[in-house]
Image 1 (spheres, rainbow, N blue to C red):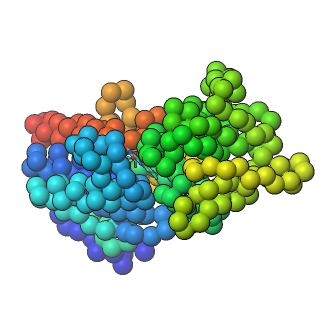
Image 2: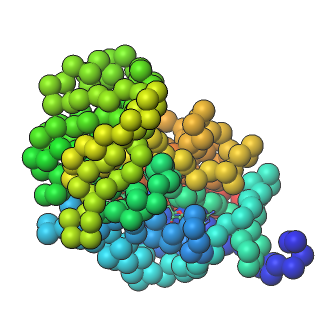
Length: 327
Ligand SMILES: Cc1cc2nc3c(=O)[nH]c(=O)nc-3n(C[C@H](O)[C@H](O)[C@H](O)COP(=O)(O)OP(=O)(O)OC[C@H]3O[C@@H](n4cnc5c(N)ncnc54)[C@H](O)[C@@H]3O)c2cc1C
């Protein structure tokens, strides 16, 4: 397979994998430090979206510097333009293999095998949905996977909302939404939550939260004009269905970090997030750095991903300078 690929002779100083806020920010900083970064943005497919998660959303209201808010795709176009201004080369190629066993490292895409002195991984994470066609139909029109991002938008204020899930994330999302919603319904298929007891108790005892045990989501209901108007739930024991009126449905069943490529290569936690050394972006392999949502299961925001991209760029630049000084 590899023999059919173009093998580059040159060695890149830095290859950045992934093109969300973390990857573009890492590119901006390394480009301004004259590291001539190559950014592999991913080739568009069902799984890969150059520009990252914000390409799937409409209004972003909480990124500093955009006082009137900004559409997610516009914001990512701005990020890209800014890092290209300082010479970043951006390519729509998906990384299919890496070899970090020796330096320079090898990074392979469907088109080319490249070498790099340092690699910054910014492949992000993917929010999980149940996979119902009606979820997709009303995406961004009442369907969301991020309460922190979308909960304060006008369509959710003083209206009933639905959250599906039973872990800590679902409890957090539901609690967060109580600030805006008239009522929050949590839909859960079992009779107890997977969440920690303290988080579960908070939700169970909250006056604005109603819990629907032994229930699954059957369908998201709505129309073209209004987006989501209700959610149909089904009792797993009786198969009886009930419609819950709401203007928003939040999927809180978890995220999948995009780390399959690094299995057995880089240290991961038990949910597949890359592990970085305390207060740095360093992975267990010297010269390989991880930034943004791919190593952050807690904050998962554009601004924290961008901040982490900056850290990765500074860590990688300093590390490369140290290598040059030694050799
Ligand atoms: C619907 C929705 C709305 C959101 N709204 C907000 C909001 O309003 N405000 C906010 O702060 N945050 C919001 N977020 C969260 C925010 O989008 C993420 O925290 C942020 O995008 C993470 O940035 P990242 O760069 O780490 O990764 P991502 O944005 O996930 O980008 C990762 C990139 O890596 C690429 N990639 C993956 N694998 C490969 C590979 N093998 N080769 C090459 N490229 C690869 C992907 O295609 C993608 O381009 C929202 C998220 C969602 C899902």
